[in-house]
Image 1 (cartoon, rainbow, N blue to C red):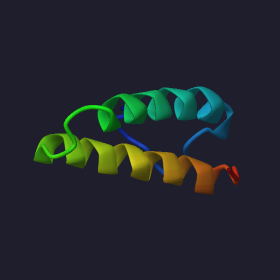
Image 2: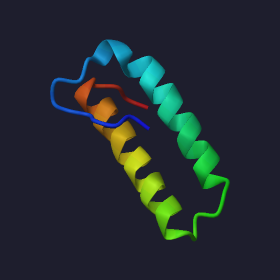
Image 3: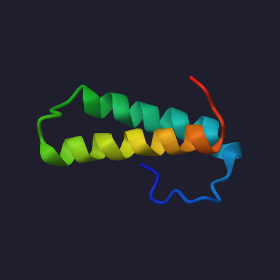
Image 4: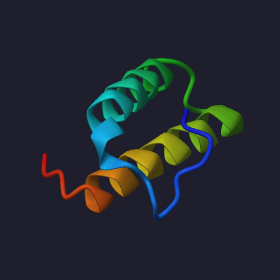
Length: 60
């Protein structure tokens, strides 16, 4: 997970970061998502992915 995303995020890193975040999200979603900690991590990863896509104007 990326520790700190801010408004000055460098979109040049978006490709690598999105790939890493999506891989982490996929791994967590295939595990026990009933666990509160796991669900919080899933939510955080989803938020980070949305932030990067919005900030860097990346459409699915």
